[in-house]
Length: 393
Image 1: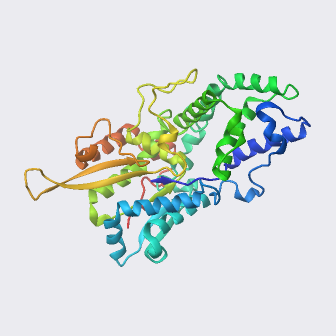
Image 2 (image 1 turned 90 degrees about the vertical axis):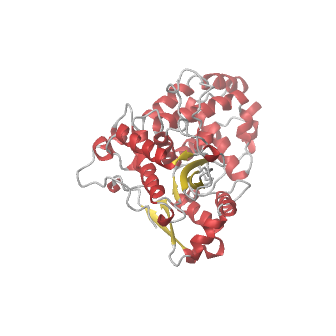
Image 3 (image 1 turned 30 degrees about the vertical axis):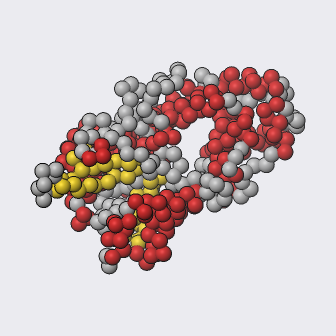
């Protein structure tokens, strides 16, 4: 499972940045100090059509990054690539119905399958419509209760974000007011400045907005983003594991089926769809929920490690012969998160910190019982799909 590559800001973030820039321009202030760069600064996009789309310029180009990732993984799994290309059928791969996600998938396929990609692969775009029920890559769009539950659902992530960011943005506001007393910024505007730092760097390779803040300011910003995703779609919401279990269960069933199912199953989604899968997997879990009054420095949940731009999680099915010389083979599941082998906390006794397939399958089944029925928990009708059906070659 991979998320889309480096991109321009989402429409909500773009609006925040545009509103900030307009107010600063309309203020008539000649900015001093940390904001003096703004006097000659221009917005890093001129056409709103590029909003939310993959970047195509700079060292962090989303198109380039997706292609390079595919090419690198081709070298890692070359034997499987040869097997796939030797088949007469096309290798299917999947993307949720969003242009930047689709583009990521296509550039990845070009790097992974090479010149044969167009003739040897078939991209299937899965609608993000709410009518898909459980048969989806984007369960956050189909789980009705998750969308409507203000206390524990989607919007709680933003509520918790606002609580934490109020603990550190006030000090930044005071610093900026001392340098430019003619204008005072809101918390939302200062947060937008921090967002502008990251997104402008993605587009241009660097950003003067980054120099406005200290290292501690960005440590706080990092934690604010962690809090948002933790409570929006991760372990901080009871819907996280429920939504993530759908894809995890479908993938587990493919591994139980074995090589006959096919050598590859690539799914491309949003970062908000990786967080639920991680939650269902129970691989990066904290003993207690993240606080919003201070930073939990020892936390395991960090968005930059779970689903950065271009992030990916790979499930590898290993077949290993017994050490006693027997010809029998045993299967294991190894998990690679953003190019790092990550052991399951309760199942890592196999080769390379892997988990025996039968134990991994038992974990998945147990988690399914714990999170409950998707249709029932999400408040969907009887005719709604109750599982993923498209994930097959």
